[in-house]
Length: 137
Ligand SMILES: [Zn+2]
Image (tube, rainbow, N blue to C red; front, side, top):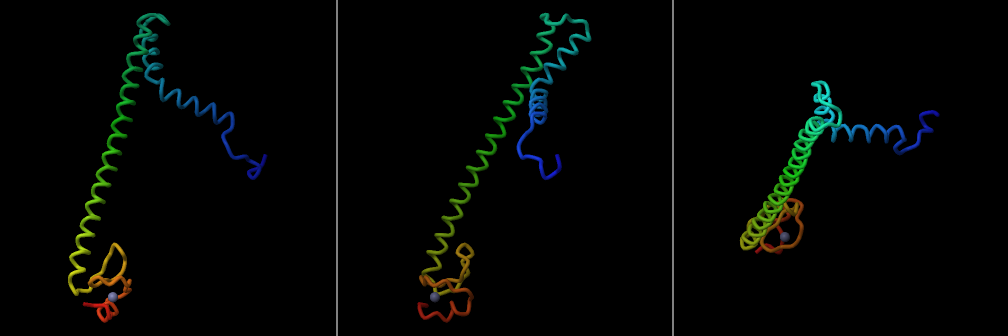
């Protein structure tokens, strides 16, 4: 099978590897704990063996759940802060436009991307035509 004949998707071997890696990521504290218990003379499947496996495994699961919860909480807080900041920014832009509409000054509206003056709705591309505009107050 040449390079160009390779099919997209996950092969059986890749599935076996994925399941193996995920299993190790979840179960490594249990494996480590039970191996340590066996090497220090505990009986396989005895009470000491079970505790040596499940205590670190339980701590690991709690730590992973806490880590995920903290990450999600932080991301949500950052999103809420960004929304608030955006709303405040839009409020300032609206207020600034309202203030400038009462003057005769030509100014660049960075939000809209063109020059403005008074209440004119023409999208002036440069300052000169905006200054000479017939609809200037
Ligand atoms: Zn104008």
